[in-house]
Length: 137
Image (cartoon, rainbow, N blue to C red; front, side):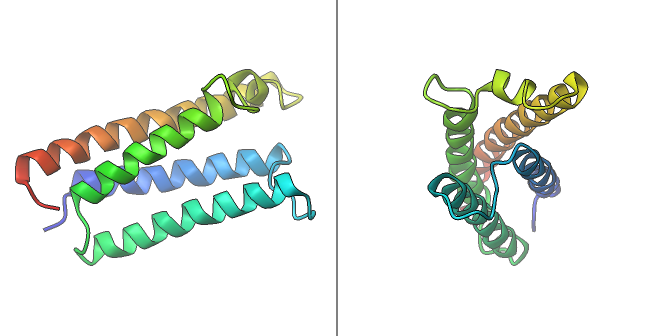
């Protein structure tokens, strides 16, 4: 039987990720112009949605469980950290905050990203807890 809390957290991650993708598009990161940077952004975005979509399909068909989401969540947290919070990123929080004419919109975009990261962390911890407690993959 599927864990309703884990399922709700996964759906929340998808919703927050869609909002973050909209932010990237609004900031011009997802252009259909054939530049190396825009092509990389598009490929990464499609890969994220492909992995999430496949994972949710397998989750709803009881083919994957907490172990899968613990590992994928950990990778997602690491990727998000490297993409936006590490010293090596080209898009740190202040870039997002100042990418818009309106400070309120920049704050909303940054708050959305922080919420996405926090929900990813909570989901990873919860999935890890469920994996350890039940021992189910």
